[in-house]
Image (tube, rainbow, N blue to C red; front, side, top):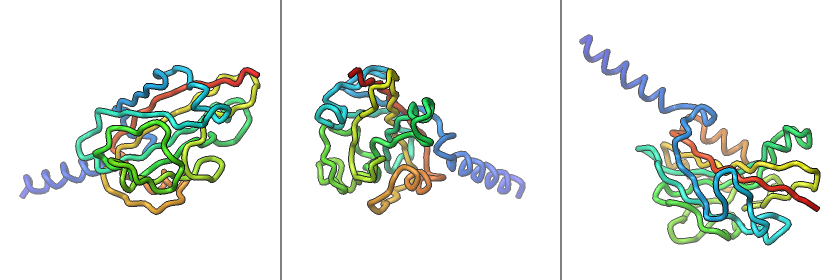
Length: 191
């Protein structure tokens, strides 16, 4: 009987360990892009001053049990320099199949994507409350801005409805994040 209770306790602790908050999840997913290296400069073509083309992303090292993925890209620098109270959100995407190994460049800003390998993926709402990618567009204020492209590996297929922004997505993912990873790019408007 003791062994049974011991096994149940181990199982419960294991489940609790998996049910971590997004900010507490281990950062073990590797994310890369052909557009720039980690801490590199986001190209002008990917900025809202350029062609506003979404960057490509590739990821690896997803944890066992990953059922779905989500993406949030924001700029926390706007808070640090007093421009805004919250990081500006540049991209939200969710319902990304766990079988996907990345996102191609130049994704459409359609709410629901119908691209091979990304069926069911949804462009959430960016900081302008529009679906899809919105590239860097800081003012020419002498500040180098940082853009955090963060992937979330989830333990369930959440099948979330369209129309979610960053805060709503984080609330829906609560208790389902197995691990995260981040690629950071920088951009500064010079003129």
